[in-house]
Image (tube, rainbow, N blue to C red; front, side):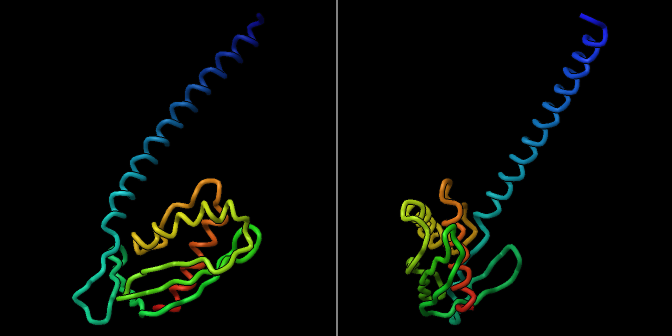
Length: 152
């Protein structure tokens, strides 16, 4: 082997080692950040049942949202077009979500509809999308957000 080739091989090895160690630092930092976000999100929203006006309090930003009881429709954009949902609010809380119509394929929409229970349980659209049905998931989230705008 020539000296140039040996020198280049050593440089490449050093650079690879630096990149790998830098990448693991980023991964560890992101893992800590994700864990901290998860822990904070568990106490993010609470419903104040003592208020007669059914105020939903968001502890993270100190804003309060009033969801008026009723049934609201919203639209979100999926992969093949619009997805329309109906959101029912009772006692200031999201109590039911139905997909009224969608142009996305059924197999993706069925998978994404898992989000409905998560949204109702968390009383928030800040949920993870379903892997393999990201566009349909985003359409449902966007449609529910759109509907809740009318409920404020």
